[in-house]
Length: 217
Image (cartoon, rainbow, N blue to C red; front, top):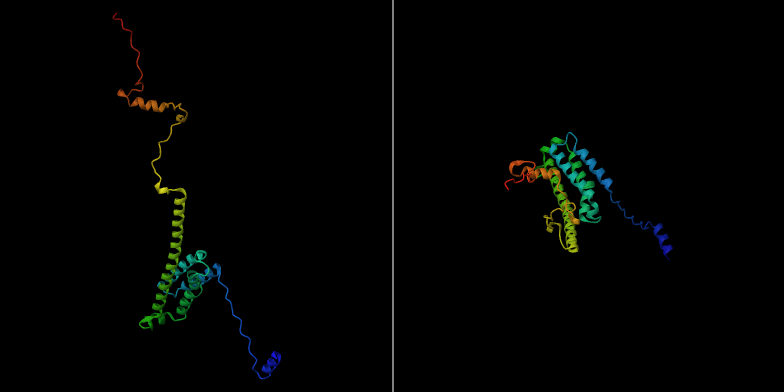
């Protein structure tokens, strides 16, 4: 019955079309993201691009580079990781390319959004992307700091103290030979120094001089 229905559908032109298969986009690698950032940085560095735009684009590029270096800490499926990847491959290139398609004089003089020109719109978009990337990186730094604090507490619980609680005033150094009770002989320089500090400042101070015998008896 199914085969007969298929034959009738083909003869009457009512054959159902196969549903298109879903296209799965490959996740960009870190190398892909860095290449996209290099391309948009080159576009923004063209002589015709205003310096205010170039500086903002390069700031976002640097922030995204820092995010790419920390993708493993953001997590593959996290919102922060998606923002980093989308900024490198979509948000930033689309903003810059849309501006570059316009003549420079027209983009900086004709209002396109209320009183804002295309140049103003681009500057606002770049500032927003920079602020967003700052938030992403701040989240990463806070997570690293929290991990450091947690590790410090673990060490304190394990060893019962922290390095800051240890006294910096340790015991005085032990003289050589003091451990076996023999002590250490004073050096020649030490004896001379002690002699120089004696009354009269003579090097032989402290030595009992020879006296003549008493002949009064």
